[in-house]
Length: 134
Image 1: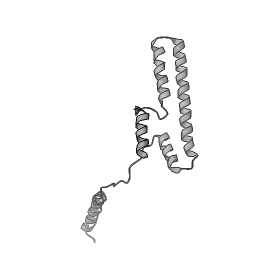
Image 2: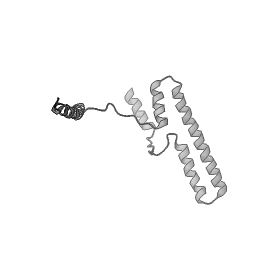
Image 3: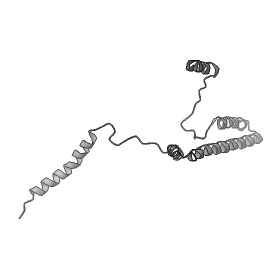
Image 4: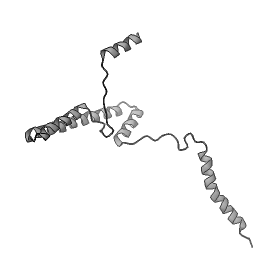
């Protein structure tokens, strides 16, 4: 049964590749992108009325998509799922998740650090022993 369903999905729905660029904002979608492209035509033709209308439509599309994105993020906080809440906060702030521990897979690093800092203590102990006591 699963093979039949997967075969039908491959044959019935076409594959579509969507390009997303790293400098796009998270709320940027196809609607805003198409409005942005539509704004360039009146601008290049030096038609101020059409340019003003296209600019207004672009601002309206940006406002709507930002509102939809804000509502989508706010809905994550209403579900009482702390994992999604933290993911939403990281998305809003642009914070990157740091990987694991400091040592990672390197088990030798703590020993190297101990040896490095212990050398100062060894020099101090030698200096104290070499001072003659009266």
